[in-house]
Image (cartoon, rainbow, N blue to C red):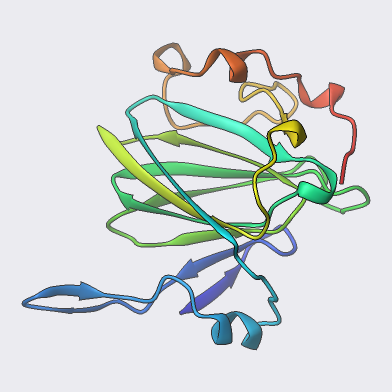
Length: 182
């Protein structure tokens, strides 16, 4: 597995070694020894999966305080634009984001450390999205930032008039209202 550093400290794009033959393909999604060899010490405790259709935007979500989560995200089927926003106090990239296209075809993954808001938009007809977390979900610790925040200015790669969001996500505060919680 190749670990590609991004412009934001601690965020990596992972490109697996894919072995293909007449039967199909095989690749490792996660290997603790490979993570350790890159100085990454994560213990994933929960796996989640969602299915969404074109134009859906989920996020930007995070878990606050002691319930914050690092995530290793990937797409099993379809294509998404995956986004992580740095919310770590004192980080030189605070308020900056990384956006990576993940697909069932490219098999890339994105590793986000704790202290990031996370979201994605679905670029294909449908997408099956999967992610590992290093901490358990706690509903009382949910937080979020508006997907269309003008200060973040994220290009979700879809026409926003075609976007579908949950009522909860449409009511999230803007970035300038964010109160550090990590």
